[in-house]
Amino acid sequence: MATPSTGPSSGPSSGPARVVVLVSGAGTNLQALLDAAADPAYGATVVAVGADREGVEGLARAERAGVPAFVCPLKDFGSRQEWDAALTGAVAAHEPDVVVLAGFMKLVGAAFLDRFAGRVVNTHPALCPSFPGTSGPADALVYGVKVTGATLFVVDAGVDTGPIVAQVAVPVEEGDDVASLHERIKTAERSMLVDAVGRMAREGFVVEGRQVRFGTGRSIV
Ligand code: GAR
Image (cartoon, rainbow, N blue to C red; front, side, top):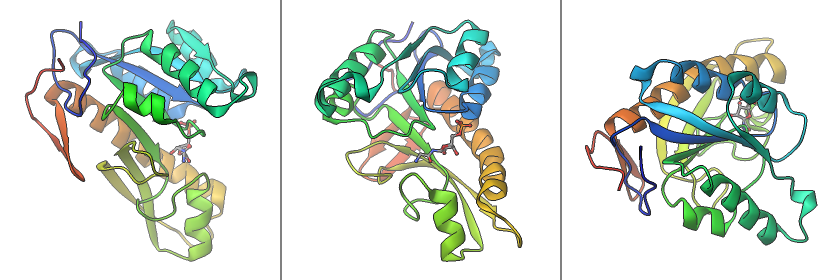
């Protein structure tokens, strides 16, 4: 079983990489990871799912898959720091090698990033550094870009600013609205996420400045 790293390098260990996925909504990216992880050759297993709100489909997906789930709502805490500490503890209890923010619509804080330094990745529905924030597809449409997409990046203290693990391009089509564009982005995004997380687990990865490289062969410890 993999041991959590304290640094930015993670890689293959004796068992599948332990992945905790955080969600806020539908959880289709989570489902793609759950489906991929059903194959032992994938190299990663989803050991827990966390959400910042009750009742979301992502939590139901975890339950159907028999994966432990927890909920950590910001409104239950007196401050953002207290919430961040509680979220950090809830995730740490599952000893993740990698934490995947998959439609998690909250910014994690300093305690969280300290605890899981270099091992938190977020998937975003735009080609970073374009259109950060919570409305990437809408912002791309308003701007009038012809190509947008999705980005998986290593989370840092900024908003969608971290080193890029993987990207996929998606053309904007005439007549697209936010829903149609986001759905097409999500189809491409799920494949990108599954591919990149699998590589992180099987090949290892290292973060050097803004560069993220696979295949470091480094142990997770
Ligand atoms: C995904 O497109 C993800 O990139 C986006 O929310 C969607 C979640 O879909 N996240 C953000 O916009 C974060 N800035 P899902 O719940 O079906 O996986």
